[in-house]
Image 1 (cartoon, rainbow over the protein chains, first blue to last red):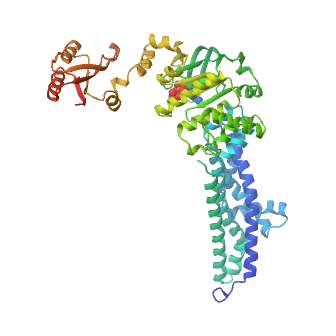
Image 2 (cartoon, chains in turn green, brown):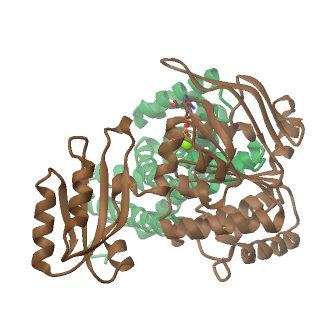
Image 3 (cartoon, each protein chain N blue to C red):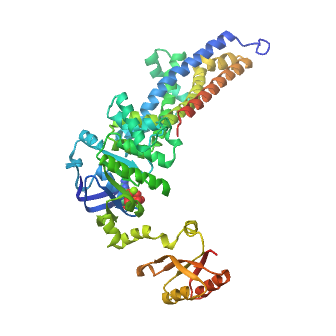
Length: 221
Length: 340
Ligand SMILES: Nc1ncnc2c1ncn2[C@@H]1O[C@H](COP(=O)(O)OP(=O)(O)OP(=O)(O)O)[C@@H](O)[C@H]1O
Ligand SMILES: [Mg+2]
């Protein structure tokens, strides 16, 4: 092992992996909650929907579109003031969280919205005919019926999110990205970059596999 | 039980208003199975959806059990809706729930405790004959079974009225019959008033007590089913009646016929206005060496261009049969041998 990768310090590789997993996990939780909330808001306020509201829909939709279009690396720079305000520092894993979440949640919100749109209108109508309240329709019809899309959308989002943690690493967020860039690329230690990449790939594969598995399990269509 | 008074429904669309129902008056009595028939776009779905206010009337009054639903608050309306069950052409089940959970859905909405729900669901499963299917997901059921789940779900909160929006239109004839039988059974057993809409006259004939014919948003004919059948007044009603009294355009499926008449030769003759009926009929029966009987005959009325189609059964020598067919087709009759 040490002959194959002479420059790899396994201890710091492990620390970096944990940092990446930490960033991924925390931002995934927030992305999930924020994405579903925004996705629901978009779906419910769209024209002809349960809480139709043109102004809310247009405002949220524009915000989501703007943040979805900004390249992540620019988003990090733009968000530095906000980051400093929230986490009081601009370097380190926690400092990367706001930009990662703001970069992923709008993307996920759109996927959630699309998933909700796929719920059969007839089923919503059947629930209304049975005297369901709007809240009951959201909790008992919309969310359960679109669960496969919600899960598979989260898988896609998570993979994009991991690539964002690596990118944030280049500007000092820590984790495997920082290791690959600072210790690997800049110090001409290609084996370090290589091992960091492999670990990222393994994480991505595991997420993809688990995501597909859960999607299949909840999809009873 | 259900009364429509001068009801009008206009949809506002991008291309201007569309009038779906015009000055509609209608009364459905308690305990009856009331059928509404009409072609696509006649306004059938609009009409039935007005009953539970899935659609709001533009004008007029709709009462269910003496209560005008469109004057109720949202909360009162939800309570009233629980007394009106509805089933749909495409079943509209929740695919994420099992049969049992689908049937329990309205009970869950009503906040019934789990134990009570289980008891009621078991009752309903027995009623619609889905025993052993409790834990299956809808995607693993046949169309007929899905509709049974739909019916059980609609009956769960013990409604007084059941609305059926083309409930059998997605099903094959045999399954349609079994679902219709189930509807009659629950109508008798539970004293439920049923309103059903369809474009198929045999559905009306099989289970309805009264029928209304809807054409372009207006009821053009209404009455007891046997009266409407025996004496259809409007052209459109006659068209619907013909759906069941005759096979469409004289078409009796070959196989059905061969089963019904296992022996003898079968032939079908079709002819239009230019052919003398008298000549055809006389040639049909003038051959002494064949014994001929008419199996089915159909004469379209004048307004449709007077087409006749006759199916006959003949006994006799095969060569004589062929010659006889030839002599009839000489008259300009389209002859088709179903079995020689
Ligand atoms: N939501 C709507 N918005 C606009 N127009 C509508 C709407 N629903 C129905 N219509 C129009 O109202 C008329 C009656 O439609 P309806 O669905 O009641 O007919 P139907 O008899 O049920 O037809 P089908 O057998 O095809 O279901 C049609 O002209 C239709 O285009
Ligand atoms: Mg319809």
